[in-house]
Length: 239
Ligand SMILES: [Zn+2]
Image 1 (cartoon, rainbow, N blue to C red):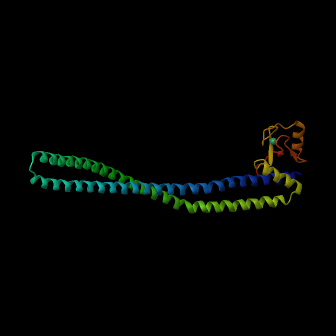
Image 2: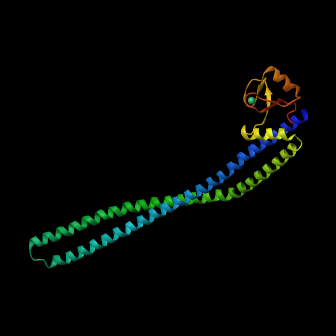
Image 3: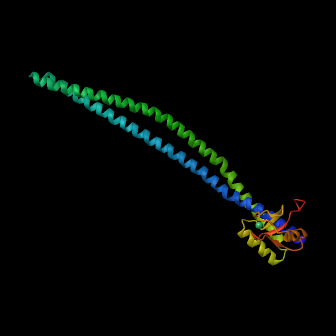
């Protein structure tokens, strides 16, 4: 029976390692996904700034066309001024010309503001491009590493499983069945130690009579609370 218990303890060690590896296996693809998401976000930022810049330039062009149109109107009116007969007509036309001048001066101010915004957008675009390059570089640098690591982890899980199953082959079937059920239902912990007269799986106090039996090690004892197989803690941790 002592030999069986040693095997169970070793099987539990393999399952502990498999648990760690499974957690890594879940975490690694998420790390890769997060790098990909960073890149997609950086790319979309670049596109946004580019489109704002295009819009800004379109607006500047339209404003320049407005100024041009107003100037043409003013030139036409100034020509008409030369042929005008009455003072009233002269005043009306002159006020129209002044009105257009004011309009153009306001549009000039708008253009200045747009040019200022354009400068900011160009700086922003440079920053966005740099951020995109950095995100791309980080993904390139880590993609292979993460993929390799996922492969390694999967390989090691397979190896650990094989070693565990080999041990299981040397144990009575009913005991293996009990072990597997506990692994499945008890957070991957089937074999626990008695520590300070308590189960170190759930903390439940072991009755003195059971403690004696556990120390004797002549039969497989289950924790009365969590049902895990409870054994005496080996002196040698690598037993
Ligand atoms: Zn317990």
